[in-house]
Amino acid sequence: MADIMDLIRNKKKAIQQSSGRRQKTVKPVSGKNKFRILPNPGDEEGQFWQDFGQHFIKDTNDKLQAVYMCVEKTHERACPICEGIAQGINEAGDDEIIEALKESRSSSRVLVNALHLDGEDAKTPVILELSPTTFEKVLELMEEYGNVTSLSEGIDILITRSGTGLNTEYSVLPAAKSKPVDAAVLKNLHNLGEYVEQEYDEGRNKAIAAVSNVSGLMLAAPPADKPLAKSLSAPVEDSLDDDMYAESSAEEPKKEEAIAKADSDEISDDELDDMLASL
Ligand SMILES: [Zn+2]
Image 1 (tube, rainbow, N blue to C red):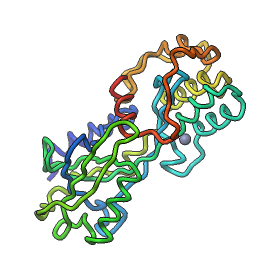
Image 2: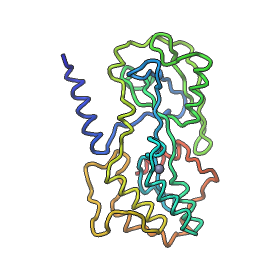
Image 3: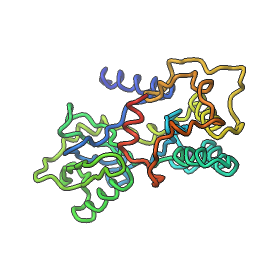
Image 4: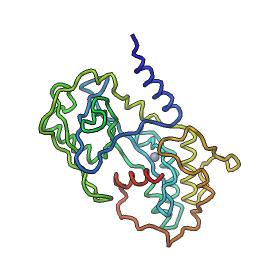
């Protein structure tokens, strides 16, 4: 017999999925974080992670303009945002614009199901979002300790986050003690493949318009006479002002407001968190 809470959860998920909103992922916070990474719901010996790429499109003042998934990093399909950015970098001819476009290239993330053992609810799986380098450390741990995702024989892991900005570091260590995980959690695992199905027209158009705006080039943006309506379907992070296209002009970068940028193209988790928090 169907469980009403499962029905509610699934319906909520379906509504969010089709509107471009989605459940928030969990990221390790500063200090120690205890997680138990969980197996693939369909195949306990199968791939338990999901690659996920996102574009954080910034203007020449380092201000975030749009967030949209990168279908190339996520699904290995041609990504219109990547193409627009590449075109902009080729044709812009202005160092500040080129730098902003480079920063808007997609960042890779790895998603796994996990129990957040020192979080608010240690029994309900969350989607844990890790940088590729942090996930690499999880994989190294698995080379040493075997399949850490096994419910009976796996181990809890401690992810410690230290430093800030580009100096943020993550260490991954086995917890001193681990308990077996109740198999009941499996029915609440997130379908990560479904989770990353996040394409939606409004978001894509917004992202392309933002790239056009930053680069000063006319890319395949939505028609100018059709303003993007403020919609309930905006994704969680995407509470951007719809007036932003009218406000900012990439053709006249304001040098005095430009924020010093790090040399690295890689955006740190902290930077992303700060940007998302500021939206
Ligand atoms: Zn892309």
